[in-house]
Amino acid sequence: MSIRPVLESRAARPTMEGAGVHLHRAFGFQDPTELDPFLLFDDFRNERPEDYLRGFPWHPHRGIETITYVLAGTVEHGDSLGNTGRLGAGDVQWMTAGSGIMHQEMPLGNAKGQMHGFQLWANLPASLKMTTPRYQDVKSADIPEITDDDGTVVRVIVGSFWGKSGPVDGIAADPQYLDISVPPGVRKTFKVDTYRRAFAYVFEGSGQFADASRPHGVLLEKEVMGQEVNIRDMSGNRTLIRFGTGDEVTVQAGDHGIRFLLISGAPLEEPVAWHGPIVMNTKAELMQAMADLRNGTFIRPAM
Image (cartoon, rainbow, N blue to C red):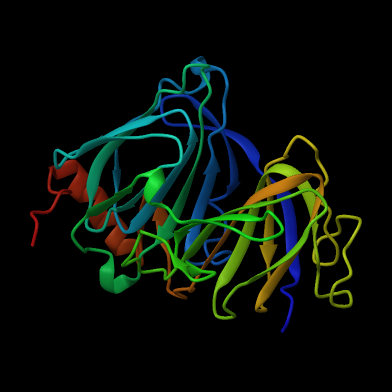
């Protein structure tokens, strides 16, 4: 067994998207090879309705898949094909934009005004860039949740883990998407296939991830890029942990436990031409997408 080295630890940065939604971005619009096949990850956690109610009005997507996971509040969505729906706490939507779709996402929050969720963008390979759009809306009750003997809880959103398989399937990036809660003081190891790129995103509690630069099982104290990592912040500090190659990730939960997403996928290793919500392989394809938007041919008839 080989522990994955910690390549980098960084805090998600505040930004604004849509019509004025305040959120934190862990990665995106930088180097698309960094976490290939994943392009962007946003944490939209807010307790002020004025900071999220304006939402994400009508906008296009082509060439990617968007994954929305709601923890608190609700998100209403609709698209140019007439699809509508509402995501509640614990629900997931995996949207394959494919050849092109116009849609909107409007966060509503809960009775206390709280809104919390994540959106991840996964790239599509060249062979599927112009595939027919589709949705997979999954209710919280349909997501397997496993509780281990030590109290560790894992929600299996996508992929297989501990004998359970998530309800989302047929995804090009061959991803594994886990929501993991480790109780206070517990040390836990999670298997990750060696061929996958992997990252963790901490959003509650604190803990320490073991690093391959030290002997197996030794946990670390200080953040130094590529060498050591400490994610101690008792409030949960929106920290991204980017891992190198290996087949396991080990975490030691802090005094208040730790909750994080562990996400991995098979890299595409293809050229990326990216402009806003449209991701293609070449500049010519990107320019064609822009032309399609201008002349009204962006939405393709179903094949």
